[in-house]
Amino acid sequence: MSSLLTESDLAREHDVVWLEDPETLDYVRQTLDKTRRRNTKPPYLRDGRMVGYARLDDGAEPDPDSGLYKRRVFFLLPHDRDSLPHGLYQEGAPGEAVDPRTIAPKKPGTKTERSQRGPGVAAATS
Image 1 (tube, rainbow, N blue to C red):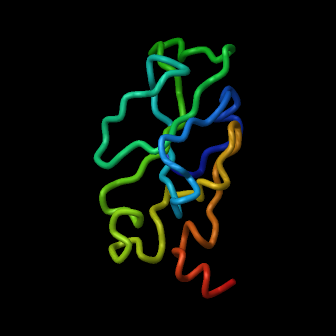
Image 2: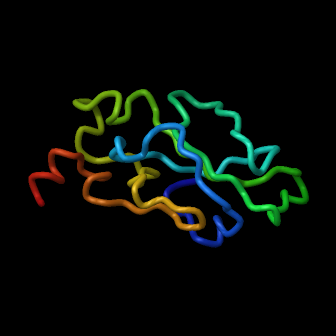
């Protein structure tokens, strides 16, 4: 799934756990993953690294068909701006990227000038 998450997708979120300081990141990718548990660190099965995840509240119920919980996971890939500042995303950002400073439980993150265009461009336009 992409950054086009709605508040209804996130209605059972209790809190967000950051594994890295979100203030140091221009953007993070966000997605909904299906996991076995609602409040522990989920497994990470992609390239790159997980930088945060959401924990669900006690009332969250798993999908009746799969028995899995849908939870938001925040991650970065090896070719993202934090690892390759002069690479593909020196300016611009992937579709699912949002500014981590705008992320809160039950609230989808949003795109900002910094997340979409880069720190140099954001500073020049301020």
